[in-house]
Image 1 (cartoon, rainbow, N blue to C red):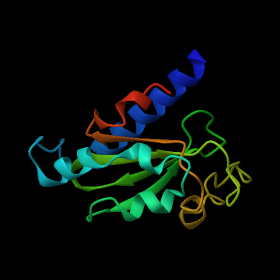
Image 2 (tube, helix red, strand yellow):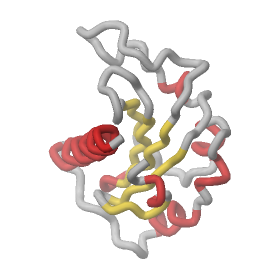
Image 3 (spheres, one colour):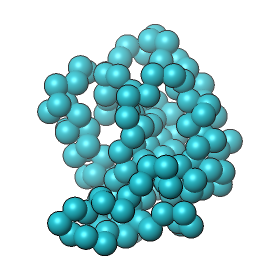
Image 4 (tube, rainbow, N blue to C red):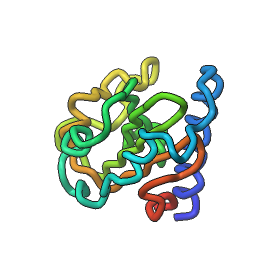
Length: 143
């Protein structure tokens, strides 16, 4: 249990570090309209429903999507939804029916991780970050 927690935190910190290394600007101020909208999303309303239903209710301005592995580097379990200035929505899935979360090719470890298939999976929980600061879903941060 502690190992899973440690690996989850490490993955999030690494991804946040990658974002800063990509020359992204620091977090947005708390009164920014994007932050206000993301704070108001009732994430629990989307748990056990398709990831896509959450995405359709997120504010406009999504830059990209990236599937990651937080617990076991060979098994996908999180979709990172990136906004400007290092704002990220992390959507976690625990069981898969539409996408094989396992790495099938170590030379290209994400080759079978397809965002469109991940979007059909059911949300376990979600967390929203403004830089490295949790702003919504924080009760799930140490899941």
